[in-house]
Amino acid sequence: MIQKPPAAPAVRAEDDDAADDDYEDTPPYHDYSEGDDSHDNLINDYLDENDNDDMASASSSSSAAANGKQRITIIGTGWAGYTLATSLDTRKFAVTVISPSPALVYTPLLASVATGKFAFYLAEEPIRGKKRGLRYVKARVEGIDLGARRLRCRTAFDWCRHDDAFEESFDTLVVCPGCAPNLFGVPGVREHAQFVRTVDDARQLRRRLFEQLEKAACAPGLTDAQRRDKLRVVIVGGGPTGVELCAELWDLARSDLARLYPGVADKLSFAIHDVAPHILSAYDRKLHEYARERLARRDNVDVRTNSHIERVEQDAIYTKEDGRLPCGLLVWATGNQSVPLVERLEGARKSGDGGLVRLLTDARLRVYKPRREEGGGEDEVWEGVYGLGDACDIEGAPLPTTAEVAVQKARYLACVLNSGSETPYKFRPKGLVTYIGNHDGIIQDREWTGKLAWLSWRQGSLTWTRSFRTRSMIFLTWGVNRLFGTELARL
Image 1 (spheres, rainbow, N blue to C red):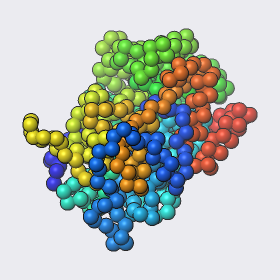
Image 2 (spheres, one colour):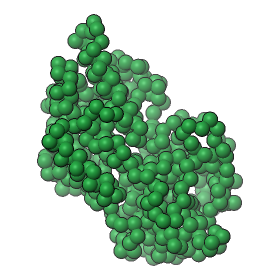
Image 3 (tube, helix red, strand yellow):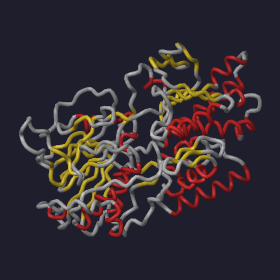
Image 4 (cartoon, one colour):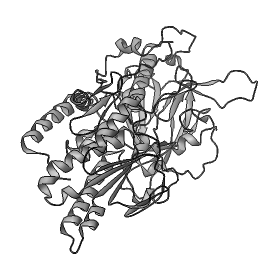
């Protein structure tokens, strides 16, 4: 066994289904939606042809399933796990996906579905039925024995009183369980904050927002000040997730909510709090300053940087700088926290992105064994064990925890496994785009702003999806909303 005894982690993966989702915090607008069965032409896109060191082909595994196929087990159904599972050649491999979540969540669309732009079901893609020969198991992986090549699992059924433990063998393992939200040890966050990492989160966010609107509209004896407190939405996190959510909520407040709640919706206000000195730190200075200036000039929008949240209560947050600040709804949209499965593995190490514990891999995405003592030679890797997604990183070449990175790595690994290529992975960055409301946005690579950036962001709503049916429904919904307004009654 290569695992340490389990410790009580700060964040439990089972408390948030997004622990199995490779969350894209800065969605690019480029299309990743090629067909599942023709990936050989993608090999050159993600291979570094300048490096051709020897690599054992994954297809030469000494173990094989009873039907003669090599068994590949994938942990997680996030961007990395889903992309890899639907890209592998199931004529050659017996592919098993283990995850408590049976669907890929289109995380860049969650703010849109929370504010009624799309139906909730359009923000996820079920894993079942997407690939002939693909096996899905609804369970959590609780332990990994890499030496014996076995997984210790427990079923994860939503309505069962008791989940069953079982073991699963593998020939090749791909670890991509994603991350959980980072609470930073702030008291009260888990009890009172709303997350935006799953479709259920988006549904609950909309319900809580409308509950506050109904209270402000119907509760007797409320003063205007009390109504404003109940309608103050605080978003902690100034990355693209927090900024886009604020932008979409602001758009909703000045359009459909103004019609549904006259005299009430105008009291809605939004505040973004971030501990960093500026929001959207992944962007160049010119762009993040443009975004902040555009947000700050709008009515009822407040951007507070260098803000340190000390504790959270049901109807207020406490900051080091301003003390108690009342709020009716708190949304927690900060960074990532390692899941317990990764933290317990002896090979897990802190990466270069703020100390997040991740499995480190070589340039071929093979997971390293526990580090040797000083002077012990080069680190060894586990043959047939790969790491993808937010939970893993390449040693010496850290990459952001985004869906773009997860998808590229997954497609590279699928090419390697399908073709036996020995060429290492090479990251090819795409443009970042963030919507800031009122048909405005920013694009990193070309430093575009305004409606052109907004159109690129809206195009991403289509290109992120994986099925023609979903794209068609999204496009149709845009037209219906344009003609009749957003449908907000059905939650």
